[in-house]
Image 1 (cartoon, rainbow, N blue to C red):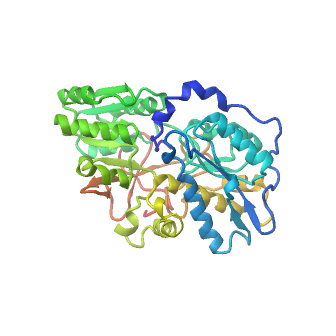
Image 2: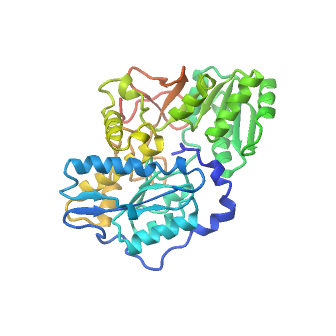
Image 3: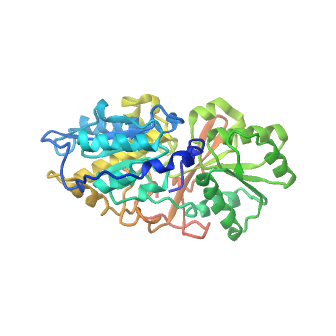
Length: 427
């Protein structure tokens, strides 16, 4: 998993606070029991950055969880039990690792929740604690500490590997006829490391990286980089930036006459597209899920996305087209799938074990299959599948579609298309 690079301006604070998130509680339930479970209900908590920096990039994860729970409860719950996420168990970690750990300890040791469903934070300071306690935990993975233990389940897997997936970036560059590639990242490890993998590997795909700036300052003026890329005849720009950084480069390119294709790893947002209009025309964004537009563009092919959109419109309409809310929905789906597999006599260990036996989880047709026996520690058996959208006249349009399949899939080390795994949505 290497999507969701929207956090780098928050990650600039990491050095000052990184030491706050590694404590582990002295008590341990070991995930052996069934806290939060009654004959009629299952109570869980959530942890999200609601009021901290870049909260809008994380808080909507809870909306997706609540919408999925509302749908399941309207259908009778799970084995007759309703799923509860009380307001008192919806914790705000304020975007800091120490608070993240503190509210996680409160949820587990005082509120006795069965699971934490809907983690959305730039600093998952509670990762070690929740893994140590064996608490089933689900959410939006943007940091490497999701691999702290087998009870932590990221929406697209729990292993962060920047090199995995470079072949899909190379595929885009070659499809668009790139002859001179520019690569730009922030001067933050998580951003620079992601783009360094591109710089390292693109030559093996016949692509020439003629410009790189992996230490671009957050909020800096992109004009000097743009002028240098124009001088180097860059015709393809790949960025490991947040939305504001991507837009700043698009503006500087337009102002200085640099005509180059752009591949963003973050920025699939309708409000951004509406705000900047034609400036974004031609921008490609790489995704790890079925694009929202696929439900209407390919009727009947992506029922999972159609269900997501209709239920979000019913229960959480302001977040219907939000990727972070989608991560929450997928997280809740993963949790419910585990509950159903574990059976009526629930324990945390049973749920964790059931999920880690799954070999083809797609969140009811929203993402390529996850192979959980290895998805905590590696990229899975492959192939790597990516979907793409391109901005066209104020709309996102699925790009590089084959027939009605929105996913392009690749074996490690090759940008040649391969057959998707059985169960891949649209495949």
